Image (tube, rainbow, N blue to C red):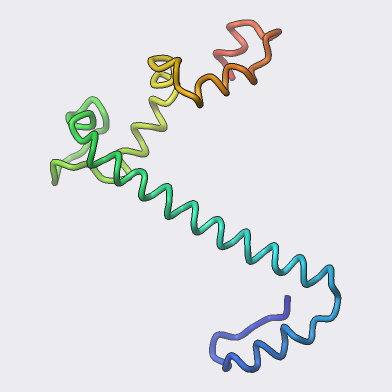
Length: 122
């Protein structure tokens, strides 16, 4: 990918990109742009899901048992508090809901030769 400047007009950028004749380089550039756009899209989706969870389940995230907050500011927790809670309790949540689709997919793909101690460590 040629180095592009923010301050130059779009015509210059189009000329530099059009000058790339190698097809494999073009494919790599297109795949890179798609990966960047997908990363940004999935980040927005994840943030939206955290916001929905914080609104719908705000009663589950209250109190000092979830996370120490010097001054709780609102009744609805922030996305960071929800992400912290999910990160710390995801395995317990899966154990409480063995009928979830994601839980069954995970248990189907686990190695049956691994004993319980090794599975707990992993």
